[in-house]
Figure 1 (cartoon, rainbow, N blue to C red):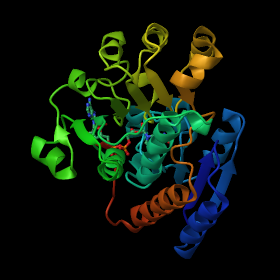
Figure 2: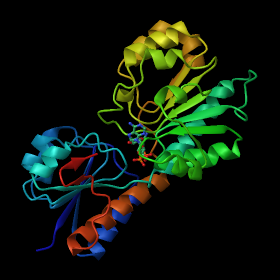
Figure 3: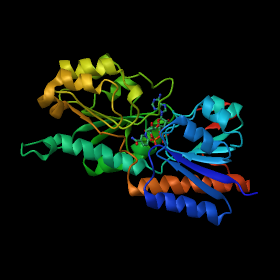
Figure 4: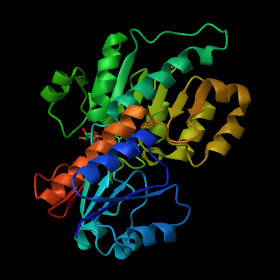
Length: 317
Ligand code: NAD
């Protein structure tokens, strides 16, 4: 019997991307099913009960999910961050979990500069703004997204620095950034951009001390995860320092409190959050990551190369 692939997304992919995923599955003899924009977990559990492969986006895949997914062999996160997936639970249920790194990285990098430039030009309200040429840029994490950020930042004439303990200083230099050796050094830059996964080390790693250490007019851009930052400290730092700004793609839990505390005029100057996560929301990123996910599933069932598995040998990233 042919294997069934379920595309389960609370936040649906662009239609072309769904079409491409379906085509790849069917061309390779797989049965394609989809559950888009589901409202409750029961719908997801029912849909996944018979699937042997599943493609998700930021969808939560916890122990309960895996216990309902009786036939599941492979789960592909179309995207980079696997923090919504309980990897030890997946391993216990014998499910291979993969992601599709690099496929949405350019989209995220373009959002970084979109937010930064709009902010520096006062959202084009007619008031004089400032330029980014000659500013320093500090990157926390130097993976796929940072690589595209570096390429753009070179074009903008920024001085680029990066901290990533999983790369050698030479590797960071080869990517076009000057290597840094600790997190506090990143926060000496005019613009700091966060590109680390949410892990035990990075969660809650940005505290008031780091925020207060930023230079005058410092801008912190977060297209990673909100839980990298201590949100109470963020609120305090923004209130205390009218020159600091926070531009983010993952809305802090205390967004309303931040907005109330700053007041309208300062919100405009200091605080930008996208209404929904927008980083990977481009036609290209949807297609790239969806197609990559479908191809990885085809390979998995062919017994070919298992790419980008994130729960190998009990090691969880
Ligand atoms: P990636 O895995 O390619 O790169 C992450 C880098 O962080 C790696 O080079 C890794 O070595 C480094 N790193 C890990 N732990 C670190 C630590 N403690 N200190 C410093 N560096 C560390 O991932 P990516 O594609 O560049 O994406 C980065 C993160 O951005 C993702 O994990 C995800 O949370 C987020 N993301 C968000 C969107 C969005 O829609 N806003 C889209 C893609 C990714």
